[in-house]
Image (cartoon, rainbow, N blue to C red):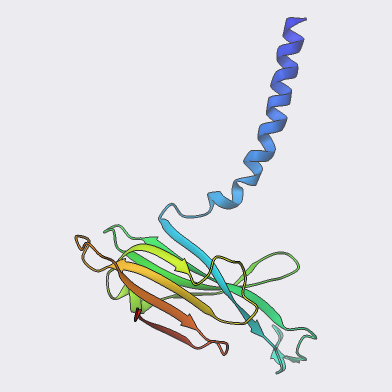
Length: 166
């Protein structure tokens, strides 16, 4: 009787662990060098113009606008500095879809040590298009205070990166 209980306990444990391992597949692809990932802001493309399809033919615009959000990511480099990227992600029926990945050269040219990235608000998605994120960084790793820089994207999609004025 004892071996049956052991086998039953092992089966119950295995069925409990297998789904947990399957659920970690998505997070396993996140690079260990990613030190900050912030999802914030939103964008909307009204798609009023016809679009060229993969076959080269013009297609009418979709009936509803394409919407999504932004993600700001800091990736640590071998020398301790970080590269910062901006992603534009679309909401789709199949889940989030990466549309664009842009390296933000303004930060990368500084050879900065990123200490934090924060959204304007932690209250969830905004109702109006745009992005406002503050990046805290040091250009000298021995500096006591971090500098504050902002990434601002307006409702038209124009981006501005500047030192915070506060």
